[in-house]
Length: 346
Image 1: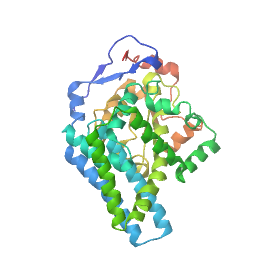
Image 2 (image 1 turned 180 degrees about the vertical axis):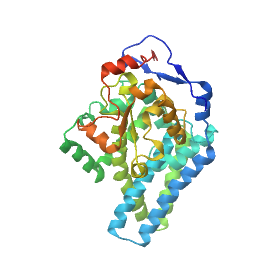
Image 3 (image 1 turned 90 degrees about the vertical axis):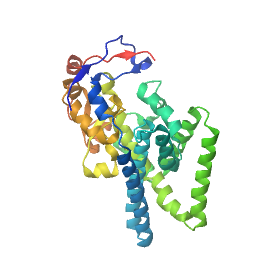
Image 4 (image 1 turned 120 degrees about the vertical axis):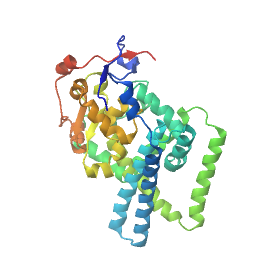
């Protein structure tokens, strides 16, 4: 790949709370086209892999029942549910399949509907988040800004209590509220899509109950959904956009987290930890994000400005006000090195 960058677009800077956020670094067109190529075969393999692991884990636990094995199964399935939602996120950006109808229907049926959300509603919410990240026009930010659970730094007792509530299922109410808020915020849904979605739930739930697998639905889908999935989504969300200090402009709104193997399996699947890279270039599918990260790190502006934290343990320390990122220059240093963000009115 021919590594080259273009400077950010010059323009008038407006107040951050009322402006649409633009990417301060521009890749040249050829580089971005290469990185943004969609591989439908790879997408299909990832979807098949995650569902296969879920079915295999549930089958093994069912036949060799043991309380400790069941706890491990809940963690494994909850982590794979999270991976499916990350794939849904790529489908939201049309990054799974080149054919947009195929992309949307596969994303809905195999990735969104099993998690009680619709991709189309999520897309409206998520694109607004991208355009106005951590501002009053960002629906994710509006839901969290007045909630003390999302104010940092926090005492360790408070943060631990939040995690415990998530792990025992109490925090799962937030997922139901999120699904409801996405539905109410979206445009009026297509009646045919709504009918197909209802038929999907009737067929899946009815088929499992009639076949005597209703309890398996609870044990191997609903319990992981309301426990481990809620917990890892909490950790991922706070790592992406919270407890970030001493960074200028958009660099102060999102974080990339360096991960090890276990984190990639149980906390941050599908390269979802490369979050600032995704915000800068959402056209890049998840399997090209490490390559994008390496390319961006050759740019001094990005290397000095990006908030990169080594591991989710250190992210939690930052949430407690005790940690620092991998590189943590002063605000003055950043200001002297980072090209001012180009802001444009929506």
